[in-house]
Image 1 (spheres, rainbow, N blue to C red):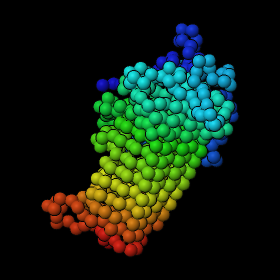
Image 2: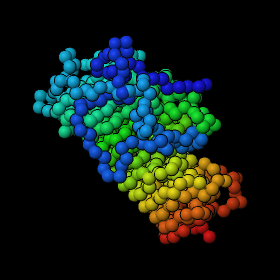
Image 3: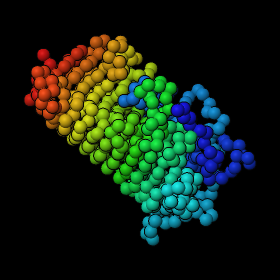
Image 4: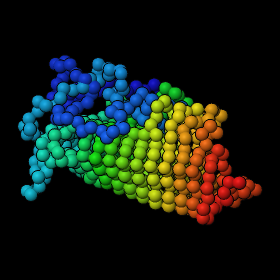
Amino acid sequence: MAIRFAAPRCVILLGFALLSCSAQEAAPSGRLQGAPVEKAPLPDGLPDALSPEDQPNASSLDDFQDVLSPVGLPDEPPPDDLQDVPSAGGLQDDPPAGAGGHPESETSKVTVFDVTDYDAVADAKTDNVEAFMKTWIAACHWRGPSKVVIPEGKFLVGQTVFQGPCNSPDPIVVEARGTILAQPDLSEYPSPEWFLFEDINQLVVKGGGTFDGQGAFAWKYNDCHQNANCLVLPTNLKFHKVNNSVVQDITSLNSKSFHFFVTNSYNFTAFNLTITAPGNSPNTDGMHLSRCDTVNLSNFTIKTGDDCLSVGQGNTNVNITGMYCGPGHGLSVGSLGKYPNEDDVKGIIWRNCTLNGTTNGARIKTWPGSPPSQASSIVYQDIVMNDVKNPIIIDQKYGDHLAKPSRVKISDVVFKNLTGTTISKVAVTLSCSELVPCDGIQMKDINLAYNGPPNFQHSLPFSSVCRGAKVSYSGKQNPPPCP
């Protein structure tokens, strides 16, 4: 069945102005803006826009690269029906008449903007996208500390864009206390994201609420394992060019595609997140990172149908700790090398994580026949595996084991204190490129035990396999090192 993303409805394009299509032409790009203040620059080395090569390649069910929103495409103007809204500079400094900007308390300096004061209805039936967008614009335009509140209840919402830059020098807070339900109808999504936070400096998202992507309605349309031109389904929460920000105490449930997608962002912190989808749900990565610097992630509980976490191209200085993963496809660096001119990956540290019944454990994956790039200074430390199929794996022929060698150079990788059980007799696979072999691979204190069926592969030794890898060993090694 062919499914297409529809052009956005007029209310999405025009938001606060509430102009009809017949009265006004929709202006550029489908993005509602906050106040017209100068944007905070990205740190050196981070590009302003995603490049076309970051479009997902649909040939693999297991992996998607970075998904672009229409305005992210360089050198190609957006279609007429995705044009930007005029700047919100015409709005006054006070909340609009009848709206709900009010002090958080008698002593607080924070002004609260509650979506129900902008006519949001918690009946799980009314599409509240207009109310959500109006609330954001008012809060973003406010010149003091502001907070968007989504109270308890079930709010149905179509594609929603919270875009900056905002006026206040203080962080802007989005406090989601209730359950936000995604529109199940795929025609409601002009581009492949449900909630998009974009061009914001100092954002805080918190509140204990749930973003329910209602993915069960959409997963049947994901045929990307057999269709190179398949539909890319919407990500639950996408953060694009969001700097100096925190996401905490949020649940992402049944996303249609990725749960969280963070791209082109600096100093991004997330903790205490719950990410849930069935183990057979396609392409529901827990969180995917692309072209980010200084990222700190901690204390996630992830049960999903693809990588629990995937660190893609261009990421530097990423610290990940306290992850629980399973079901899922493991803790992945990659896939890398699918597109030309990918940025290098450096400084990725995973610590104190637990994997339960996952397809993979600590994994680095690159595409064969790739353009040259590098992945270095990667550490997996203090990882517990429970019946993981492939506990330690470097796969430089990801997707096609008969193709040309990868040109992604992998170096300075440490696997330290990885313990637990596996259902495979080959517990360690280091399959590196024949063209640019892996250098500086260190295996320290590896203690894994076979826990598969007693009559399965009973005659095979518990072992490691290495190809094109320069490996050093120290401490306990079970399975035994490569010969």
